[in-house]
Length: 414
Image (cartoon, rainbow, N blue to C red; front, side, top):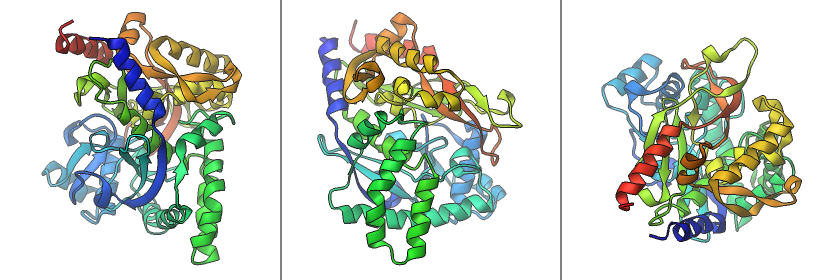
């Protein structure tokens, strides 16, 4: 078994992938396996009885959005009776930030990897405050979701279609990394590039000035607007690296608020999981670590693809959001070179003389060197319905990498 060659193949596929935002569609129409009572979620598999507070809150909100329930009690009863089914986004080619819930009628971004032909999907970003992805499900949250689905996502979809060729997300990310973003929690430059690309197209397809103004303002006011198509792009890139026989590279990192899970390119679709940990960072006024839910979300797909926490050196301003220093940001990136297989060909960092970002997490190196991947993240309240309480940094449990190494040795008779 030539492990190094297998890893070179996997990381090359990841870096060569060219994800392009091609369309916006309804989840049930495009995501493989979606059906009317199925709800996708972030992270590895989890049952209703083990779901964390924010995940349950997001599921309740999604059931209300779908018209399957009118109240929290009705939604909870449906879930307890097994009338609502749940599955990980990652097992259906999709991703979503925080709780990451995608329900059948939700509009999703459709990103196609033009190099290898695979597709990935992500829901739309709701902005800040009390939002479904943080477990909130008030009338205000549902009203915003309906506007996003019926008006905003529709006009974005028409704009993408009017572009003809779609938006090259890899190129957008490469430029944003040179403008102070890291691609996960700091997306100010990327979202402005997204707005720059969309604005003339929205103006072209908008039916009236008020709709055009409202849509463009929503993007401009939300510095996370581009995160969701970026996540879909990263999913398309990492999926291209999955399934390489003999590879020890991580192709998925994801959290559901209860468990942290990874999947490995050469180990099929098996999840390796352990309890998720609470991030360390900054708390919003009135909240403390005691209010925080353990780590949650599919957005660690950005780190899996070589950006986010792995590219912190190029985004020193992120430290004001996650509670560290510019020196810490630089050291975070330098440390990640110790556990990765390559330096990215397209994602480079001016502050490191345009060195490529550390890409391709190797489970062997993680265990051998005792260095865990760094992830930037938001933090949700542990109870449903409240929302975000802070932001910070987190690492996966070492146990999942140790378990993966043992499973690899057993599979390949090492």
